[in-house]
Image (cartoon, rainbow, N blue to C red; front, side, top):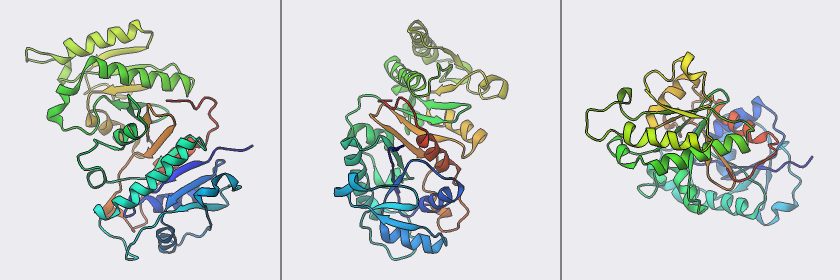
Length: 328
């Protein structure tokens, strides 16, 4: 059987990514060919550093369709990157390299060669600056998608924040009925069309205990009417629930997804419960994009002690021969 390859952008060169990539290749055999977009020099340097041995196949982009690909080799599209053969601090120096890597991946995805895409950790502060809140929004703009959702996926329980990498003092101003509808419809469609699951969705309140002493209470004025509308639309959704108790074992077991109003409201508990056993899936794109659910982890670079589980889960998710990989 011919499997569509998985495109992997290595991301920030001064990160733990190549270390966990090597560990991922040691831990598991994957059916779909992996194509790494990365500096060949950087790859060779880190293979030597981590004493990882595997044959390398250099892939020319212009002949991509002509290769017989498998995972006997590390299949790599080389992107030039100058470095001093040592681990460096994350800085703007790598921005052009990351941008070129993404551009190559985007061209491959737009060509229809594959719909499977993973990117390694990237410093949002250095690479995106103030242009985008995160990679989710960066990809949404590149592919002219009108809607997006950041789903932190675990088979037992997933979470999605209505607002993403937004300062807390701006959250309440950004929460609207329209935004809630968009995110919940994307989540519901992904579970139904891609995973063949009719999901049970919980929506959290914004305020403690879903109450407020202010005249305008978001839970009453925005969340409750939104939930009623979603229920009438045939979605199995309920709430709002207080955030301080929903993640208790006997409560969370009743749901497939918990939707929160802001980033840390749902990402803190999901990472506490599952640690590295979760992946970041961007919904709303014409392909599946996943990243490990952690950052570059600059302090751990070169120490050979980073946990590869999230990357293994990301590759494994895409390695399944899903029957309906349409726009999610």
